[in-house]
Length: 269
Ligand SMILES: [Zn+2]
Image 1: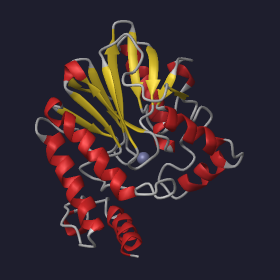
Image 2: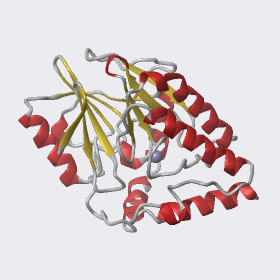
Image 3: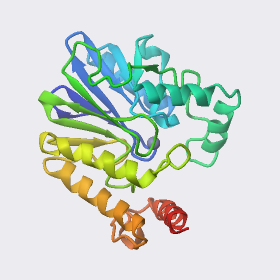
């Protein structure tokens, strides 16, 4: 089901970790950001777009994690963009013949084992390094690239709609999750990224996280502040006072506390 969150901007929320696929309408078709997760959900999105009489003219992946680089052939053979670093990261991962098997194995631990189509995973074309907008004929979409959470991670600001598509940050259910493998300074990368998002927070009347609830006016800044408080607590070895972990966590999201414990121990070392 597609839900309108701003003029010409619709969201499809997955059953899996509240993943958000975003549809942006242009004059000749839609831009599809992080299309979704299970085959059934991708099929639902195909049907919803057909019902609206819309075709997909381009895709965009906010970052190179498996749940953000999926695709369904029925969306069409159109350009699927990401930042240059995002595309390079997924290309490198897929250059290992066992990569998709490893993702499938990881999915065995989830409730969507065997339900995710991996055939077209990761076929992302990198935009030129430093690209600041998505090349398409719809509303201007600014790319805000940073290295928090994943290499070549991009938030998108749909400027004249006041919509911030945040990728895997500023979630109301997930804490900041750090990139440990590639980053020399995961905390510093995260704080830098939050500053970049803060620069556009006043323009973002709607914020769409990669996972979690869509936020309205004021939420972009509030969520940036909450993420920053979490990151600073970990940096300083303090236990964060954060509603996303501990007894206040939403039912079904207790595992986020386990992620936190792992990160806390890692930084404490
Ligand atoms: Zn991610």
